[in-house]
Length: 140
Image (cartoon, rainbow, N blue to C red; front, side, top):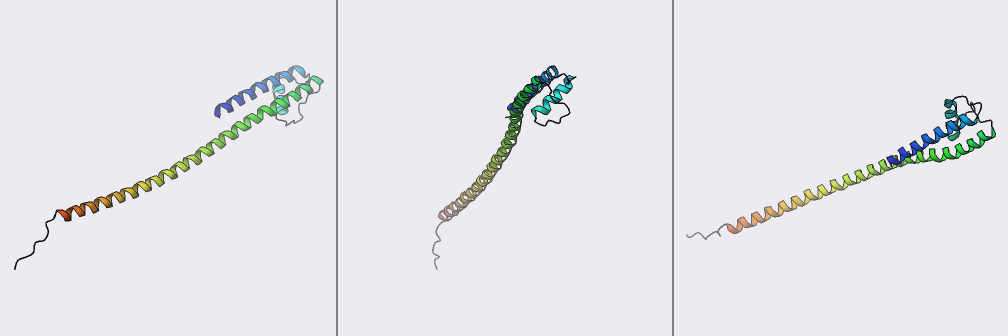
């Protein structure tokens, strides 16, 4: 999942660079590439602060394209981040479940050991009593 996040961020960066350069070339009021990048980001994120806006018809059409691309790519980034958090939560639950099973198995093993030891003790006691010679009657 982390690879998907990096791909999404790289795609987002490429689209923002493409958008910034596009606004810089299409809009006469966008004087610097930095202003074009800012307009591309605010447009793609659908924030639209209004400090820099497209005025030409080509700039407005390009802004529509940037909104569609921006929503798509920013949604991918958000989904990738959410997937990472969900994956970590699921992994934590699995680990907790595995630990619980491990503790239960250890309790079972201890109980079985105690039973085996009890049986061994009983067998030893039984063998000991069988090995002893029977009490002979005392002659008087």
